[in-house]
Image (cartoon, rainbow, N blue to C red):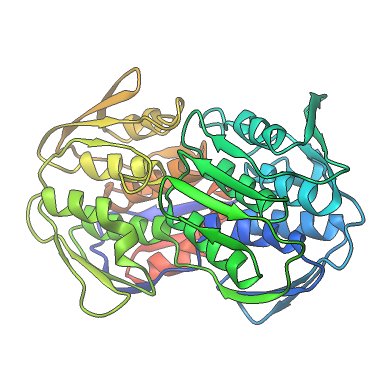
Length: 419
């Protein structure tokens, strides 16, 4: 298995570009199943989860052509196999995103339950409940969800018991081809939901309210092809800002969307970093002074993103004082704590809250990645740890970060990949 070897103690300086958002590209690729015409997607990141989704589209019968470094042309002329087999999607948590499109387009779907990171339950029951309200018949057995709607889906009002990003996206895709109007209440407001809605609008869908807690969809008979550019990855951009902050560096992230980073920027300023926007699509962090500890709680957008919690915790190990990090989204997202403690961090976990005492001197160790964002936190800690840290099982990081070692090296980090 690949690993990173990181020599700590280097201050990061320079510019780094954010790739397209993995969490926006995944539903965009799934949406290509809704039309028999070609869809051209730009800024598709080259990460493992995207490769898995592309393999899944090909399995259903779609043709897929990569053009250049980040453009993909998808043509799902016919749905040959309305299924997402375990063998294809076992490493990806987003397999449920094809459930709605397949039922809406083919009238049936046979989809494996989500795999991927062991950070907590993914509420696929909300997907299933919503599809049932739209008229689908749902059964579940042997690790698969079976859905059928031979007479098509019918619009209705769906109230999510809890906010779910993938559930909102899945139901929105199902509803665009349903008969009549669908209203999604308590919908997710994440930028990735808005980006998917923008793609669907280009394909001929009728959607209002994306980005608010209520989304209205009026079904249409068919969707057509479209061309769309994926939004910047706010989690990758945030990770680079945190990398600049933890090393006392001066880092500018380009090709990003500052509005999507509001909660993180507020916390970085609170802990003593200087944040500026030198130009459109750019955010600069300068952390030349001492860092102050601040408390943080993850929340649905526009709150602090759970996908940046682990990286922020690494930063707090280098801040003066006591900080409290509370995780409200996933019940098992402190798996990185034990590895950070092995590097010298002073962290105590009490239920869904971690208490971090800083500033501490981190030292190199051999650590193991447990999930995608935990991997990033260990890399950030290694950047300031004394000695050479070995970060093992970085295939987790490859699921969501495009060539992160090359991007960090471009900022001056001493990082190399080994197998």
